[in-house]
Image (cartoon, rainbow, N blue to C red; front, side, top):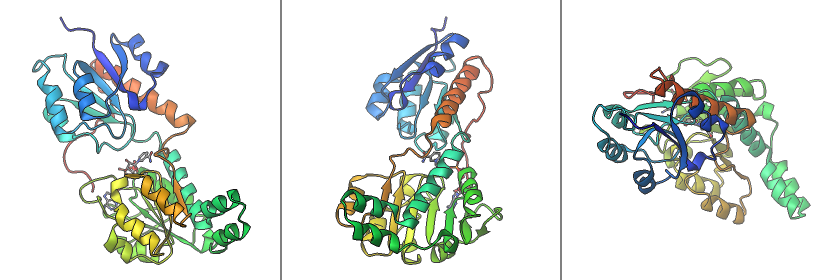
Length: 333
Ligand SMILES: NC(=O)c1ccc[n+]([C@@H]2O[C@H](COP(=O)([O-])OP(=O)(O)OC[C@H]3O[C@@H](n4cnc5c(N)ncnc54)[C@H](O)[C@@H]3O)[C@@H](O)[C@H]2O)c1
């Protein structure tokens, strides 16, 4: 006889709320919060779980999945069967390895489109206007510096915005930005038309743009896509925003571009490390906004994400299709 299924919520995205604990009211199971942030924590805490709800960085790579699958009874009902990614990007889960072990992976692809596109637009507008520099100067009581930060700006209606990646979030950003900007360009090799924007190659988008906002997934092809070569061909004074995945930008190259004056502002919701950007601000480059991967958050989004994850777990444990299954195989990028 199978034991009561165990459902885990990664402590990184805790605490447990009634959305998760309520799973056990709908289908027999135990729901627990456990640390799953590292390979060691996964090896210690994940064995025995039938379903796991996790965030954007818990490393469910091939070796980790093989270790967990090896503990399960082959073909039995007790091993790990479902991984629910509470968000969009599944770059921290090896989808092919999961499929090979019979583990279903789902995500929640559309719950944060409004929040992330709002967030990216807020960063773009703040940086183009010089708001961070004015803010830092105002806090220091330095009126000339505040004025200098803003005096370089131009009206949005004269600026060109480039959007890299025209999927759910990129397209929503285009729709919001099109009435504000002189022109919106899109660089996405997998789309031909985007209402409100002109689709162009990456190099052309960067050569024309006053601001660029990144909305691609992280894939082998997009990793380091904005690096020394691509940034070197950009229009001087470019503002760079990333609310997608940190590794799409080569941050060494981006920092160099800010220090040499090629890039005039940086807005990073995602970054491989915040220290270098704090140092940059301290070194006299205040047009930097960091938001600690909060781009998808908001009162509505958090409720929707939790509800949708719980629904997927209940459906799976009830023997139904959980929906939003991420399949292995070639994906754009
Ligand atoms: N900051 C946050 O909190 C947050 C929240 C949700 C999603 N995200 C991230 O935002 C990104 C976009 O999410 P989405 O839901 O819009 O994804 P999506 O899959 O709907 O769209 C991605 C788009 O990128 C395009 N693309 C792929 N390779 C490309 C390339 N080499 N050059 C240009 N375009 C390319 C695809 O064709 C697609 O149109 C993902 O990285 C996701 O993980 C971040």
